[in-house]
Length: 584
Image (cartoon, rainbow, N blue to C red; front, side):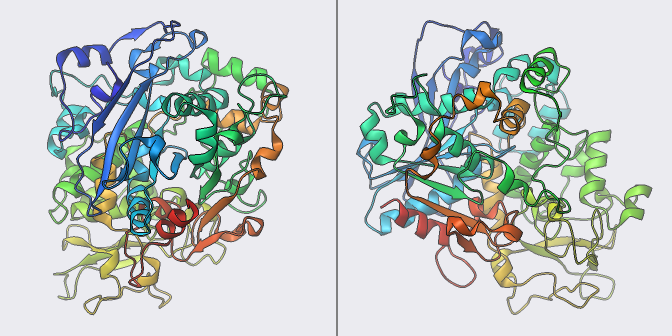
């Protein structure tokens, strides 16, 4: 039985059985018999972008015996398949197939909006293409049974209250010593998974070369670059197996098609110029030593910090999306219902402190404010609140009514962890002015969606400098759709257990044990490509001009995936129109 039949499905798509739940908990030695299987399950969606068929596809492609003991469900690869309702049912009959690799800490569900928008735009242009959002194998470790209930209350009870869902009990978030097999899930396994999946789903190299467009978001651009140059049969003289010969073209979503993290890291000497500083270990040791450290557990097998970025907080984002989807305008009870522990409390202080004094004092906390569910999600992920650029979206702005002066609650500058007064604010934190509610225990703070910023009733909150915090041209994503993507998809928006080895391999890519596989260097330029750059995102201060990119004003790093189909200028979303045209 496939992973698609386990606890990862949502209530509107799943038909859980006791046998599936038991299988999901098994840990077995990997099979080497080559047995394959495939399931495709319809996904019902409440997206406003209709006439798009979404399915979850799972294909049994077992891990090699060398990785050792691992959960049985991890012998399956999954992806979300999007196609026009008027298009062909067989992928091989589509005009083009866009295959997307996710970025760091990102799952297939993150592509939902851009996939739907692109399918719709292509159909309007008279073409029927498909979009495949890949899910990394490590996502098999997640337990999403709580999110799958569709109820924030039930989800919190499952993860923190010991309550069961369909006979299943949450066993806790995994630790590094429980995921030893991830030590072998690096570049080679990741690109091999893509190659094997494409070969299984689209037999015939000529078909793949004609119809498949390979790409991704953020780190997904680097993985696509590695895939393009990889030699899959061990014989560099033969090129039918080369990665670039599985693709007709490349697409990059706020990234570049390369084999290096340099573009994503920005200027090495620049302040904060790194996608995930402090999270990606810079070991300073060689390839063999790193592999030994991962296998023995001296180095962590998946990326996690003590707070802000770890499996529990990634799951908390999904909980926030679920609450905002279920009751967007209701006063949030989520932060009062989850426990007070070091990780959650420190994360809350990092995300919701007005200045360093408040952070150090620990008061007031986000629990002291009255916020709607949408306002909580906005505080976590909006570019005027979230302190980390790579998780920022442009989903609107805080709002309030009923403040002490009758005009609404105060909203002031947020000067932590970086100050709005610093003209050289590190790129790590994003370039937009940060804001925060300033009346704990006072009025209810609500959320003004992206398409209501700049409306006649917009109070236009201003920074202490006198500048407006935001404007209509800076807002591009519908917060309701962000919440839906976070909580409705059968394959997650976030990735709880990102393999450390995947990034250490990229850092050590010149080591002979890896470089010997990246032999088709010309593969990076062997096919046409299109590059989209978020105008306010992580590449904004070093836009790769040699890529001839499409620069998207107002977009943040995640907006290239989540932007609404119609923008505030009344035009169709640019990536959807240009990417569907490129697929021609």
